[in-house]
Image (cartoon, rainbow, N blue to C red; front, side):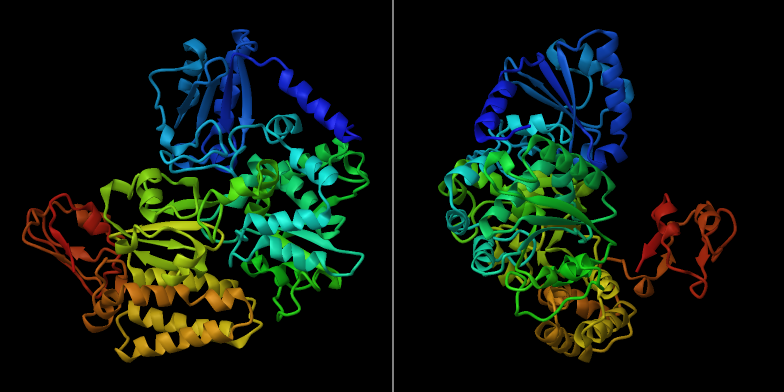
Length: 613
């Protein structure tokens, strides 16, 4: 039990002096690692070490996500004497033993990952040579998230100790303002100013809420942090509670994140047992408790007022602002809502100082941003880069370009409410302001890459369909307006729209943005407007030529057999609706009335005898 700051410092020093094994073998066991078969690999390594009695040589550690989702199961081996780090990807049970057999844990004969995907050994240092800089993800993939001592040895809870003993609540708030940290969950409002609003409220009861309701399709940043470094969020919440005068915190997390929930429960229990959460933290007289609240998967509950209503046991619907939650939020009390990534920055800021933080990123947007790189990119995974890094560096240096060497076409940032940025803007530095200028937004950090085979009209329809399903239905612009937008997009994809639909789309989309109640409705037309602005030629091809340039919209596609046909019957035998006929060794024909445009014949033919028109 740590009942004083002196005991805290002493414990940390003792942990740092604990003898280490020669090498540490880190196994990525976040959700993606487990899904890829990480547990059997971990068990195989454990068995190998035990059988060869090499516990003094190899320290086997289960970690959270390393970020390299494209090559799970992933392993990092660290030789503590030399500092050498080696990364292995796509490890199997069969070749896992090679890591243990090899001298000092450096194996040969299995894939070794490129080190550019990782940050340097000093996680919180940024140099011109690297693309990534890890602040939020500094411990993910590096420590066992279920052992609090490992977090303590990386500087964990040192920021909280510093804040509680050396700073007043007002000084904490001012340092947050000075850091320039902007909310990483959506609009990018100053986290420090938000804290300041709540701190100035006279109420004797206040709350701090962590928004872990990560609902964007393709986004998994918050999940990775909670699975790999839960104590960073707990520490930040305690700091925030001290700053604004709150003694109760809630983490609102979606029930679909069972591993994150499990590791949070373990972390909260351990922190309470050590005296780092609960009553009289480190003997300073400050009390702060954290409780988990589970969401049922409603995307709209990522909006702070809807989230607050859900915690209260009400229907998750947004309300008009003002008053803002910082003035009147949970149960009518001043409430701060910060998302996971915002909070995960805070311990590092107080350990290293605001000047250090402001040197990273841009003048108006200091720090880093975590992106979930997904879609048609070769290396899917989590990346953390200084704000201001270009799209090109993220997609091509970290993501290795599009899969199969396909041509890069666009990238969508900001989740389903973001916009699509075309290839000629690939050298744009990513920050809050430039993305808005391009018709997109930072959002929570989803980044979906599209290649030449994607139809941008269909992409807009896909994302609009998601927000349509997730709308709470409270306000008419979102409930009815988005349905009309979707109907118009569907008519374009079906080749049934006229040229007047473009003006109607733009007018309705603008109206929805201006009149919707909450951020979901206000940003839902972004995919439509951004694709219209950047890919109008594709819209006109659908409308005027009744043609989908990418060959995606099935009702605008016709499959025809050309003279290359040798009558092998392969296409006819694979057609699911038996619409292809013809004799062996003679040219076949497709019955267009029966064809369902599935493309099986096109993909099956070995003689390039089928044209997709």
